[in-house]
Amino acid sequence: MRIFFLGGLVCATLGAVPLAQATEAEPFTRPHRFSAQDIAAFADARIVALKAGLQLKAEQETNWPALETALRDAAKARVARIEETRNSGAAAFSADPIGALQRRAHYMAARSGELDKIAAAAKPLYDVLDEAQKRRFGPLLASALHERMRGAPGARRGGDMTSAF
Image (tube, rainbow, N blue to C red; front, side, top):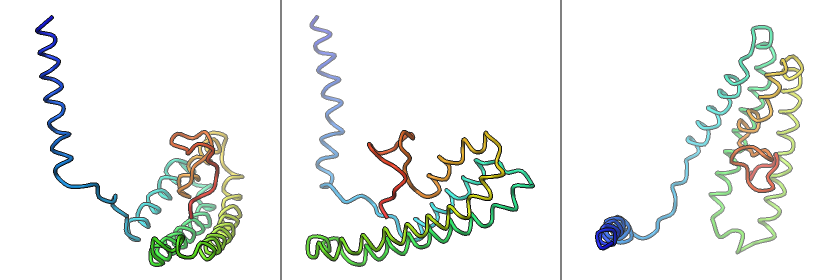
């Protein structure tokens, strides 16, 4: 019994050492924020992943460029909105809540127009996909748009096809 107690005490002590060192090292720091170039690179990777995941056949490839262009345009606009938000300052909402709500409404209206363009560009491609490709299309597109789908792995509770920007 005494050996189990001493073994437990040793394990607890050894486990606490890294925690003590971590708290002494430096106080909580703000998580890293990705640069505009980082965000654009991730968007490019998600678009490439969409195409790879669909495994398009040669006859389907002709419908891909329109969707890719619409996705890239939306990604560029998203990066611009993120940069604009960052440049306006973190305290902008508390300093001017009405202005912040108006900017948010403007961003959402712009995003709505982008999604309409993406839907129009995606329809011809979607119409020529086989059943397996159609099954993958929704989750892959949501990922390419950097959005969450209800019920998808990692989706926020109550999430849908809306984005933060």
